[in-house]
Image (cartoon, rainbow, N blue to C red; front, side, top):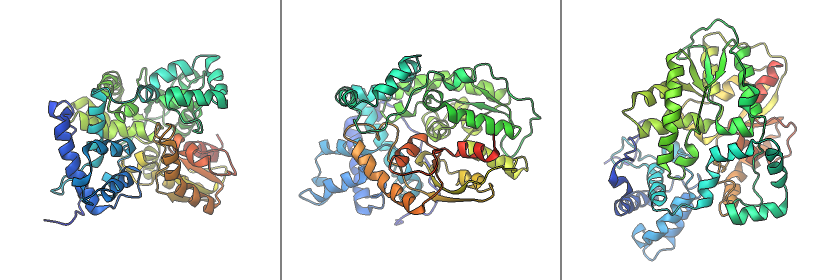
Length: 441
């Protein structure tokens, strides 16, 4: 038996339609097996609070082993996992193809799915993960301004903490009535010669994403301007639902399936017309690159989208390698600290954001490869906000020491979480915004 594995991780499909997937007794058996291995290793203790919670349960038990931990306490571990996948991709030596076949994130997902099916996930968590409902209400004229103003009032925030489980200290995103889709409603792709480069075909359909559409439309527009400046025609998808990541993290797999039925046919139609797909939020790209393909391993349409969806900077690197990226920049950026989002790291594409920003003359990019602790809902919920801040603290401390001109993260939620602890020299916190600025667009 090997102690560990140095081979590249492989992932088994998620057998979520099998009735045994929701068998709680079999789930607990698998959790005990995996927890026992984790207890004997402990390499992942610094990643999130799931592992310290598990190890404290073991260390405080009568036996100092997993058999001394009550099964009902296993759910305390589940509640702290926000499925960043870093343990699987960067730390664990026992993932497949190792014979121990350890997949911590997927057993946590299975546990959340069991909880959801039993009706044990909080209603408030269901609501704050419903980005479709939030966007529909939050983007209404007048209503968006009222929500943004109310979110700054202590009294309102105390009520939200009691009713929606939103910690009164958490930074909540703003809503825009003039969404990205409204801003770009009548856009026609720029007329340019479409040229292939690597696996990219030279014209892009932007999957706007809930967050970029309603909360940070400027980022979507930054992407469009940068891509079209580089001769890449950009259009929006005709329709889209949430990518499904917020619901996946709640174990609501039926809603994930519902969103798939809208998104995949639309994306496949565009791909068949010659368009590549790009999204500005790493979690959304990951959903189509990894999570849906693992849920639907035999669906050719899901697998087709997997092959044709790109992180924006991954796409730009392909263009640069083919000599198609413009490198005539008008503004130096100085020192940039780039926090690498977890959901971008686990795509295994490498530091493409750094590689592109480093092309700007007079620019130094320093990476921080640690989690911000936000995760979308984990970083705003009462009960996890403080833990989220604790996870972010080492990133903030390192960023302070670097004394950079800019702090950026491809994930706008991670950027906000870190920026709240810093006195920034410049307000821009997204690398697409910086790139647009460097081009002078």
